Length: 509
RNA sequence: GGCCCGUUGGUCAAUCGGUUAAGACGCCUCCCUUUCACGGAGGAAUGAGGGGUUCGACUCCCCUACGGGCUACCA
Image (cartoon, rainbow, N blue to C red):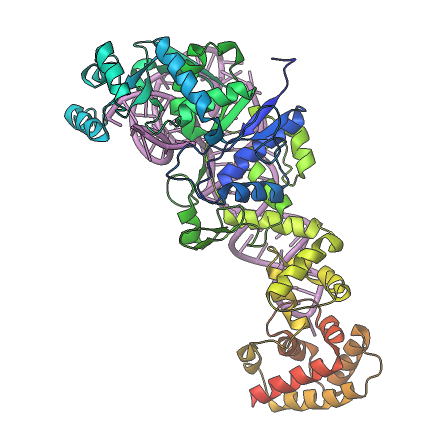
């Protein structure tokens, strides 16, 4: 294994939006490949024609590309290991399935869905609510183990629909060596005769994953923990196909769980709790329904990757902010947790805030510009460049730049006038009216001059700066937030400053 | 129900037999700041329970409890 090329794969099925757990699996694969100088391949598991969704494959590629973890090989970048869509590899699965039947490791089964239901109903008991198709039950079903050879060939000739099932041996220990969990032992009596080849001629995941991992020379196979129970089927298949010595090293990643209750995180939880679950916006081609993604929610890909990497993995130090190259350097499968992690959106936002703070103005410029544009604010680059340093410490999501910047471009839509009213009186109105007159004659419109002017005027009226500076801010920006007030006044200009004060004054009457 | 995986503060988590059980998010207090953030200093908060093994267990073993996954001609 040491001298073998490291090859890993991410194998999503194109059924919809790309879940953050999927991105993390892709990321861990990518990091492992980078760390060991291997190849990261994308394989599309589109064997379920009923669940296939138009556009999902391209969308997945876009997500990975946005995250900066584009695969080295895949349908978009073929090499000698292709094709990379399982639907395009159909013929191979059939021939391997037949080979397994010939060798006695699999068999034809002609049971209809109704007959399967019937069987499950018949064998159902309190102690066994979901009977399997296994050593016991297969003897009573319609398959090439119970039928005569003639009957079987007749069925096939008559195009009676059939599936091919693996024939799980009785009373055998199947050992999985998992890089994260160590040795996991399964008893073959507990695993059922999984369908390998479906009636439509397509393989199930079980067959496809081992055929493809073998043919694509995958050295390490990583996937979510939900696959652990079917691992014995895959191990048996590697053995039966005579490829045991080529079997990849397995690792089953812990699941990403719902923040509140129980269970793995789903798209629904995001909708319910108000945070994204998909990497990017996903539009369902049938319903047209849009599901929000991290990208559109205002996440930086660097932050997204960073927070995902730390969900179930750490380098053993207390460092939390990593860029992708550093992750690739420090990553190791052995340091991945065994237990699932609840997703915490607050912490996710913190990561993003850290990355915004770390990003340069120039890197932020196009992103901020876009946020402003989607809110119908068009501005020169120069102005945005001047503004970004003023507010970026106040933004956790890119979209926060809109709230933090809008009042530089337009008068505030809403003014928290009640916050002013509470401690207002005529003397303050008078003061501002007089100060406006002074502003009108002001030649140098700089923060410093403005502050001087304001403070001197205040002093001469025997008022306190604190009592008027906050109201002034609210008049200019609409609320209690934003950079130093005289910076704002200076940047929005004389006319806007005076207009906004006057407007608030009329509201106060 | 069965099988499998897991279990350190509310959350993410360090520890790989000997520590006052790190750090981070969130929360609270204070400082900085006549706003909000950022930053700084503090604070509350953790080994599921019970048995072993050991001079010594968060760490190793067993049982229980709890959580999760799987149990499709879906992946």
